[in-house]
Image (cartoon, rainbow, N blue to C red; front, side, top):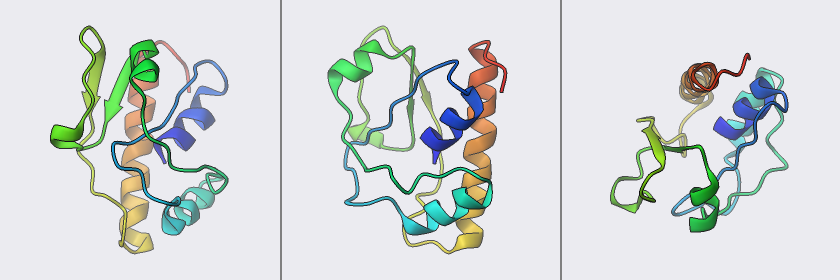
Length: 116
């Protein structure tokens, strides 16, 4: 959801990549539905693992509660967004997570000097 928000709000002014320490087999269909409600299509995305080379190129690394599995590259800027995992949650709960992520992405972009 964060990548979908980022791409929609940055409108090409910045690039983002998404990856996880333990990616799922597929995008959560409830997350796809929730994002579609705000006009953002994420259904074609596929979960991916993060890579050290990708992290090393990042201006900001955003983690989402991965704990000890979170990546660490010295010298990188990190933000940890504590969010509930939408896996297994209903649409109302996922909407709240979606909206929280959207707000956080807006703040991140503003901090990078990118109008959203």
